[in-house]
Image (cartoon, rainbow, N blue to C red; front, side):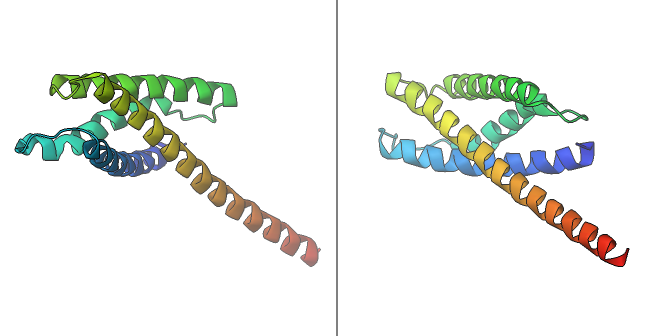
Length: 146
């Protein structure tokens, strides 16, 4: 994958992570006690999480086509780094107050990671199917002219 294409994908990943985190914070917030006053810093947390999760996602970059095994290894490393990053940030802002919060945050990270990878897979598959169809049509056109 070219660097320019990878950077476009990173921006997409950043926005999707931010959206997923915002939803996860809202859902977890429904089941936990939230203080009556929120710090203004709290409104920047989805951005902070998304920024650092996107940074650790750079581990998946390769200028060459990866084998399935290499991709799975990189995705596993990416997941571990994202999980550690989110838990560290959440711990740093003193939001991991009990076992429920630790489990909720870890589970939210897992769900968001899986959903984003599924969305990415289906979008990539649709793009590949379009390219295959164009190649098939071009081949038919070329064979018809012969």
